[in-house]
Image (cartoon, rainbow, N blue to C red):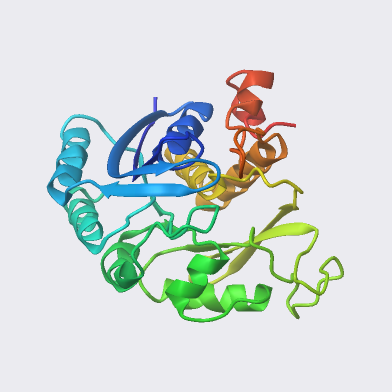
Length: 289
């Protein structure tokens, strides 16, 4: 069995963070492990408080995994403070794992901040250069690249800028809705910039690859970024190349959103196990229909 480590924050409501990562790993038939960097008291409506784990304890959790268990992929999620980033980066350099997927979590679905804005420079200098793939959404890419993203052309420009920071591959996620097409004028886009497709753009340093799926009309999208990045990490651990891993993860998260669960009063969680419940553990059917 392939084994994947998530280094991220804990979401007590179960929809995002470590909890979403472990569910996603299980849905893909890989063994999930975790190193918790922050304990987050949150639910579908708000973030109540965050308590960061001491950097030495973060390091010891990572040591505990690597000294005993072979790791086929690493997913990095919420890193709220520069000290946590430094601790994680040090261990990545020490153990040099394959298939490092970075999800630069900055905000909860309800807009509450999960990363100290003053730590973005540390993220850029210490963590991003160690990744095989980084998966920012539009607001995160804007912060990292230092630019406004209003269309697909700007997504490509931001991907180039972030790639130059040292990460081998950059996937800009378009779930926050920008106007599609190379001109920024998609026939499906309305004046607000929302379109009928959810477009993600992958840049490998040479070429751009676009991944498009139907934009699903639902408020229940808590944890989609965590789920998507974890699905990519799981597929990389399973031996798929990056393009196929992203494609399969895109199909998986789209199904999880389509059958999202109306739990809580705010943004409910996605359905991590829809495909598993319907088809059983068969890789060709993990994505759902």
